[in-house]
Amino acid sequence: MLLEQDLKDISTSREADDLEAESAEEILTIAVKKYHPRLALSASFGAPEGMVLLDMMHRIEPEARVFVLDTGRLHTATHDLVDRVRDRYGKVVEVVFPRAAEVEHMVREQGMNLFYSSVENRKHCCRIRKVEPMRRYLTELDAYVSGLRRDQNLNRHDTAKMELDVGNGGLVKFNPLADWTHEQVMSYVDEYAVPINSLHAQGFPSVGCEPCSRAIQSGEDARAGRWWWESDGVKECGLHLSEDQDGGLGI
Ligand code: SF4
Image (cartoon, rainbow, N blue to C red; front, top):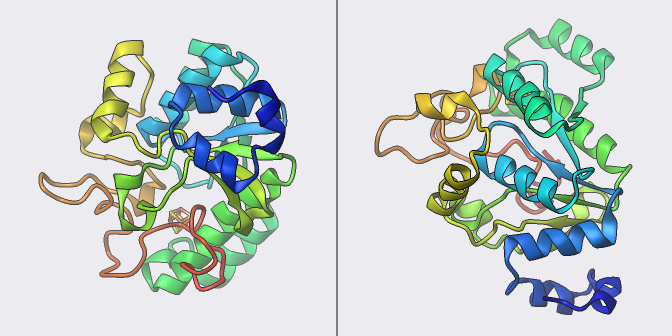
């Protein structure tokens, strides 16, 4: 466990290296001590990783903050999970919405389901409904926590347990589950009866927006159900991409 006095230098590369040996619970404890209440968990409510972290953070600090981006196109099951978390933990979930004027302009100009017509349009929709609200919300914080794991896809292989999120203004990003496997995540869910999205039981490994995610078949990649009509390229909404990966678009 890192010593209390080390926390002041947590943003240095040496501290980032030290954190690689720490457990998820220890990293969250360090993050909460240093940054709460200017720290929040970013949870999609569509992946079990975020719910595991929510449970862990709640045990460490019941007032620990959590936010979710409501794109306006989420599944009802995802909204249900937000309310189940309110009931289970007595926790305020900070729901962040896109700017209404930008969504109205987009759908008037390009239609309700513009994302099916081109990758560019899909990224535009993600930018309006996810990336901009995320960046706006993060300006209130000094650090945030995400549920990224290295074995989720090739783009996440280099995920560090602590890094600076340059694309979102240079705040600190903790990825306490970076070295966890899916089996470890589900084992924690079972052990602590953590509430998760009901669509996982219907073949959705990760649940995104309703028109852009589907169940997968046995043997398909876990991300195959996201933007399944796109044949190649980076299947990310842009929230977790570096400027190099997304060509500087930040989406
Ligand atoms: S996942 Fe689909 S509906 Fe959701 S923001 Fe991206 S393109 Fe739009």
